[in-house]
Amino acid sequence: MLKVRVINGPNLNLLGVREPGIYGDNTLEGIQNMLREAAPGYGMELDFFQSNHEGAIIDSIHEAFQQGFQGIIINPGAFTHYSYAIRDAVSAVKLPTIEVHLSNIHAREEFRAKSVIAPSCIGQISGLGADSYLAALYALHRKLSK
Image 1: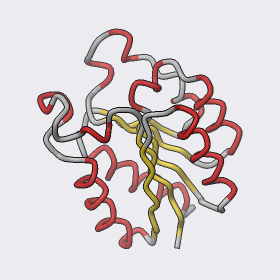
Image 2: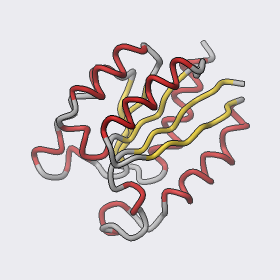
Image 3: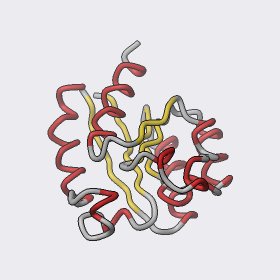
Image 4: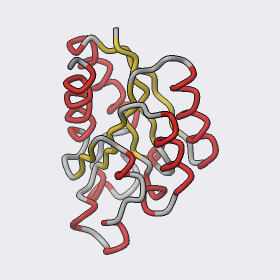
């Protein structure tokens, strides 16, 4: 089994309530359940983590490396645009990481189009709603199975 950590950043615990016109009406728990259902088909075991705190997200990235995870799917939320510390953590552990976003960050406010984390990732998927996570699961499976 491939072990993958799914990390969600600030305000993603409010999915389903927070701006459903942008982020949809699915809850974080709903997205996690969707991923739990899909993971066995890819031979994956998933571990979920969410925090509104930058340091806790960095610790989770480090722990994924230390605990032998093979990859990470991360939605850094607003940290996407300015957290060089999360970027450095992703770079340091060298685990294949895919950045995901529910909304199309390139079609929104100008500041949202820039990710400081994406250059440390193997890819970025945005704009597909909850399916962004499923696409990341598929892509990470393909990368790890090669």
